[in-house]
Image 1: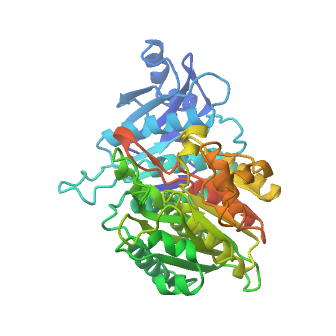
Image 2: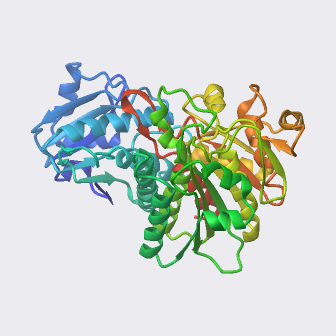
Image 3: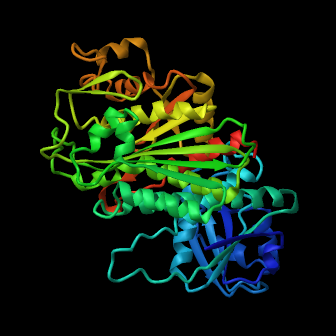
Length: 496
């Protein structure tokens, strides 16, 4: 679906559907009042009948109003006079999109400039959320359905803006389009079945992305190279599977060659059985989403490529399949990491931190400005924060603050958890330098503590997206998060 921005009077626009906001108590803003005047009071007369109260997200579809070039007018409630929050704003936009998709018209015009959104001063923030919501709402994954979804009639939506805000709205749409594109790629990769989406498949996707973009260099390290580098923890995770592990390295150069890069590290466990520490069978199909961190790095990189941000970025995807077999790692095994630290593997289902720890050591060679790892790491994070908020830990307060701020502005929020020294003691092992689990208490934090031991030489943050990367139930599927947060962070670093 195409989004365009125009400055034109709503009453004079020719479209299949013109969308106008109505406040609670049937209050009309300046734009709707002008349309009402052009239609000789038709809107006021209809509202007086009480068919629309104006509560947030309520809709009323009108046909053939006099004096207008629009074939239909869709009124949408925007609530009371005070500004809407992000959630209510998204609800309003989603409600409008649902009605528009049910209509036969190929285009629509949204005149929502009058709607105020809390903490979204100016036009950019409000319209960025609007555009992302509209574009992400068009996502369909029917690749494996014999009967595909019907093509949607709605092809174009025009957003009306005043002249003063035109450039901001255009910039918001440009950024939102790139972010939605990245989210779509992340969702596609997450939703693919694990018999197709395995480590070698992800490596092929990286190579294709490299061929499509001249500024992107791609290198794939196979299992031999992983072993030769001394990545004993990484290698151990994949050794029980017929699908060999891969470390995917993607370099994007959008700034001067001498500029230090930002590094994104994605956990790419393409299927997680738990290994010898086998998971329960219920809902194990959802363990195809255990590569959500790698998928979100792919999506963020696509957004960066489309926006051609003036930064240097390195993306490291630690990809493996965690399977039980005669060759699989056992509880009690001890491995030596690339850093030289030894790890006692007490639970083979705590495998994400094993592929990440060696990849975090590998990241040192790029002399990064900052490193962020993204992983569906712990079920404990879902217990702590549910499915709305990602967990955030790190060793640099400035970096943590930047990510928290980016999450707020992108409406893709994270919440900081502590990494106090007391938690580190839970990882003590009598036989190795460190154990890979810290017991039942504070599981998300001790996982972060484990990773912190491999990230001492640079500014580092860890995003636990176990609760936010996918949704369960009737709407099961990858969400595309945290692509908005990560892209906003990089937009900020690029000064855009």
